[in-house]
Image (cartoon, rainbow, N blue to C red; front, side):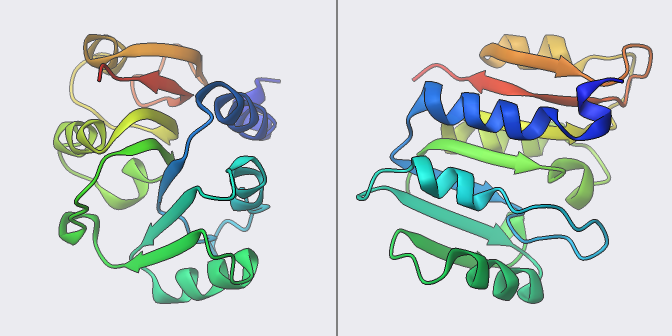
Length: 173
């Protein structure tokens, strides 16, 4: 069975990404646990590899998800949250790593290219696990390759243009 389908791919790619990037700042878009799809939290893995002077910022539009996530991180001083829509999130900095798991497909149902471009501007590295619904036959891989270097790139279903992708993208400085 494909790793992406049985859920074992995400934890492995997350661990590899944290080891490769060694970020001092992480932005987790859609950070809250999903009540409709409960899963083990991955913030603990990020925080366990983040230095003491590192920063983890979680963004989610759901206040219940933010509250649940606060409980998971237990008052860690490196952690801050912002609750609201991604369109209204206006950080004044660039992060070492942006993490998204089912963020683009879950929050944006129209043209997803502007969302991808905005994420690219927020970070040097992007770790993603998402299903993209983009027009045309599989333009996303070529588009992402034009933006940066793909590392540890996995696809769930090769013959479906909306298939799930999981991997690490490095954008130029």
